[in-house]
Length: 122
Image 1 (cartoon, rainbow, N blue to C red):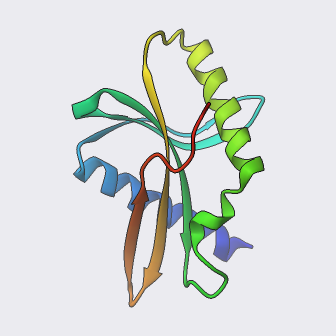
Image 2 (cartoon, one colour; image 1 turned 135 degrees about the vertical axis):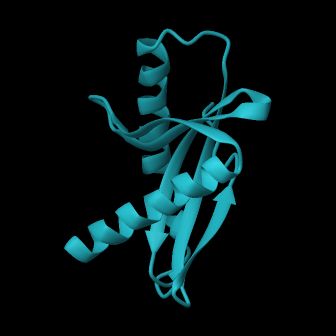
């Protein structure tokens, strides 16, 4: 279990570095409220879009693609958690997006796949 936690943390760190490099502003990491958790909340700066990101890290693709772990139930939980975040922070008239970042540790380096608009919040 500790191995999976370490992979997740390392993958999340890699995702944050990637996002910063792409010009995103990180607002929160591991945001939690009574509904659930969101791995990263960021602003896609040029477009002023609030982005809720689910990070999935894997050491290989033996069991399929990482994004496949973000099923309908997980999507609903992220959406509901994000709605509470927006309400608690009194954010009005803000564009939002739900992304998934897959992080794979292959050939001794992290490889990142960023899936923008991975699912719809409506």
